[in-house]
Image 1 (cartoon, rainbow, N blue to C red):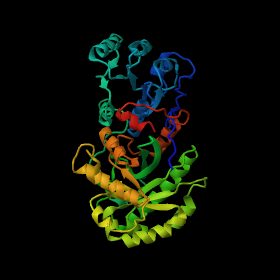
Image 2 (cartoon, rainbow, N blue to C red; image 1 turned 135 degrees about the vertical axis):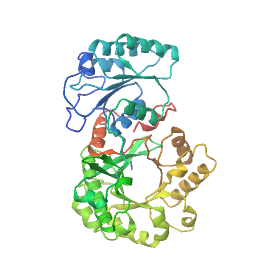
Image 3 (cartoon, one colour; image 1 turned 30 degrees about the horizontal axis):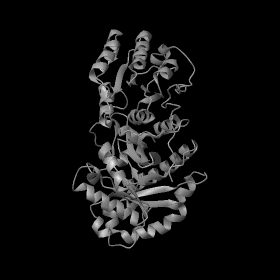
Length: 439
């Protein structure tokens, strides 16, 4: 059901020149070309040097989702030999047992006149790392505080914020959805959905965003409150069309993904979903279809309607899922069948499920309930590796959250798929949070 998410051959987006392949077989060129090219661009670029593909992919996911293009290198030798037409803004360099390789990379950056930031990553002792930082300082490099492994998503996000890279933080603006639709400010971003047991990309979920001419990118909390019914129906239709078109873009890269969209059940009954799907669905082999997420609150009061919708949508390859599931599971446990492809655990129960004595048994109960009805269990809002590992031990199938990849514009999601198009992920026995994002 899931497609393995491939690995590096970066193709950045946003009109910037595309960097060349960053694999160990890349053509030789001076380190200066990697570090400080003169090509103009608007999208920042981060380079990641680490022999562990899981670490590279993890950091890349976070950077890409934050609006930073990436190139990945399997070792320092590949990094020093590779070339690109773009200047980089930050370089992540792993320091392993052979610290000399990292030193050589830092020296090459210094000789090239590199002016961006250098972020060391390592689980080595402080004395070794301070010596390497000293080498960078001698070359007048901007050496950031060492990032100790294993690290969480927030550590990378902090670096992005402090270095003023990527998308600016959202502002607290308030506009009407009808104004958004009238001015065509709406766009849809996509978040990876990961098979947390197989470490593979299993799907994506579409999220509405607004690109405002003055305020920048706005989240739904800025434009959804107070929306009228007509605007919500229009929003839902645009979400369906966008998801179908994105599915075609992904399929052209050889990746067929089921894409989920959030639609209110009241909007569903007013939309010609069958006609929309027929008009815009990808004409590809084995199309996995769409998933429409309905909140648990809607389902508890409209279970008979959900059953009818399931029958009606099945010929169109559209399935239903319960979002934010958990608080009303007791009432649904009494039913003999539930017509859902997925049950998405409420993030309030997922958070700290690895240690919380209340949340853990609730998560396990919901996961078992999902499986008893033939549905997949999905943990959402994942930000800690310990929570993912706990869900895996409970038998959870899929996961979403900033730990595994945050929502990103469609073109950036496509760029991420292209970047992983040539190298398959390799097993990694470690317990780093990055191991969960090798998809």
